[in-house]
Length: 106
Image: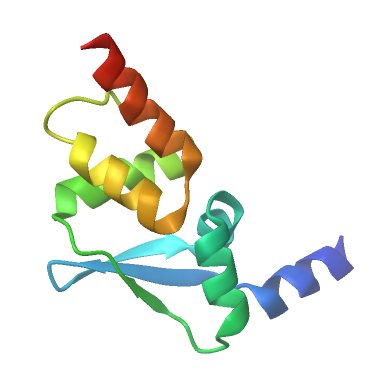
């Protein structure tokens, strides 16, 4: 287990901040990298990455993070734009699919 931990700590930052509305939201770099290939590549390519910009409102970003962390989110009018946007930018297919399902059912 020590080798795995060393590898993870070497290649992925433990703390990354998603910035929206000039407000940093502290996140687990490991979880973000595991759920988004784009973020994983960003973290791998830059040793100094500590912040990632996401131009949306704070509630929208928090809904996206809830999904990334494995939580349940009801997709609806209030959050579908944020979830779809985050999914497109960071290539999180699960988010895109959730919005498409909501649109198809509505």
